[in-house]
Amino acid sequence: MKTKEFLSQLKIAKAVIPSNSVLPILDSFCFIDGNVIGTDIEHWAIVETEIKKDFLVDAKIFLNVVKTIKTKELSIELSEDERHVLIKPIGVSQVFKLKTNNLDDFPKIPECETPVGKLTQKDAFNISNAIPALSDDLRRPGLAKVFVSKEYCATDAHVMVWGKIEGKIKKPILVTKKIAKLLKGEYLVYNDAAWVGLRSKGYTLMFRDEELKFPNYRAIIPKEHNILLTCDKKEFSQATAAVLTCCSSTTRQGVITLEEDGETMLINSKDLDFENEMSVEIPARYEVKSGRFKIGFNFNRMKRALSMIKDDTLKIKLSEENRAIVINDKVLIMPISISD
Image 1 (tube, rainbow, N blue to C red):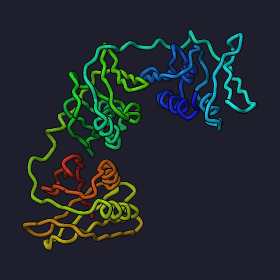
Image 2 (image 1 turned 135 degrees about the vertical axis):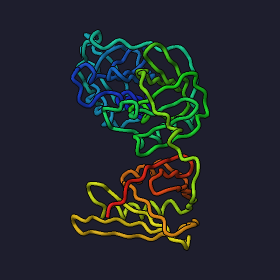
Image 3 (image 1 turned 120 degrees about the vertical axis):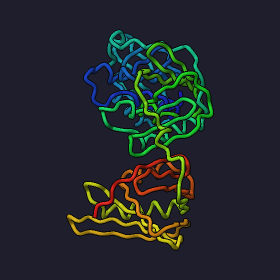
Image 4 (image 1 turned 180 degrees about the vertical axis):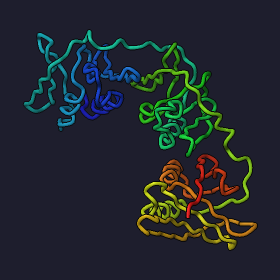
């Protein structure tokens, strides 16, 4: 088999294997029925391979061995007593001999065969691209997943991204971060009992279908705006990064100031504890109807919000100093109170 192709298959299976598992058996690749399988119990990756032998082997060691092979092709065999797997690079006199484990100890693969819809390649990209908006708060597990129905949405209650789903899904699902990282291409969606399956060419991803509440995200999107600000994304991102270096380590506060001239935007931050200050002025187009407009943000969150926007130009909708702003009709970020 081709080494590069096989390595890609292993990486998909390895992506769901836990880094520090309390169950040693989960540190393994399970080769069975022509597939290589990885799992952490909550997630499964089942990847088609050319290997027809069934065996269980330590995933980290096996993957590292395959990475060292420089030949274009390799072969995988079992020893006569099936206690070892033999990895042989084609064309060189090398044999890697790794101990196999008891295949019967591996968890039973869940079944998920009822089709409920599909996701397009663009849908997969958008779901994966939404990862920076996910929450790490264990008390709110629903916000650690991407909501997918007629629209997709991800939020940690500070930053939010949303948009349309091109495919069609009969039942809403919550896609975990571990699965979202793997999404590429088109997928058929399956749902049986407690599992959701995403099937693409050559592999299937599965994760638990948990009944978690997801907020009514549409309710927090401002319906009106007073200011439409247009600027270059690269310039705004560079200014944000520069100002972030002098932000308070506690609040990460930065302030955006719009003057009546409608031609420039001032971005600044202060760290009163260390008496540091940074200001950057960049070109922008907008109209302020009554006096100066100032609004504060946590610039770490602003950085995450900008990472999910691929457009060259930013169109930012603002209403009031204490209301969320919307960037390019797809990303929302909540402001913070400005502290002197």
